[in-house]
Length: 224
Image (tube, rainbow, N blue to C red):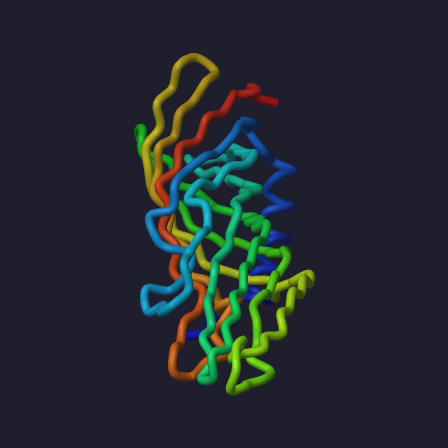
């Protein structure tokens, strides 16, 4: 299922900037968490998912009137996988991908008592490097060595398509003076996969569904 949300995403940004002009309070801090889902889809075959589970980055929380607030994050994590390929004539190759992932969630939150629920959009960009290595059988003989191999090693930069996702979150707040802790659960549904297998017999792809368990730590800067 694809989600057509790029135009609504632009409209959401305009509405957020309008609300920032009437902010009642501002808090700065950091958000860290652990992914509960795999980076590669559960239907994945041969690839070994070597993505890091952690996610971390700064956050800005802007309090508005009537229990509403806007949260903006910039979250980093490291992704990667190893995918072996076996040929029919003794060929062998392996692809290793390592990439830096940045997510930029923008959430509207409703706060009641010590709990909150939120929803919004997230924008994701992924850049990395692809390393392919292995060997091909290029000759056969009746005497040793029976096989002749040609080895290869290629490294190239990878820039994946930007992703947009719908985010739903919920959690509670613990206040201690100007410090606030916000344990929370987040679900993100991305509009597409960013990597997909080219082998029809062994289909796999990145996961369009993402669940994370996060903890925010913020410092309240006070009212205007």
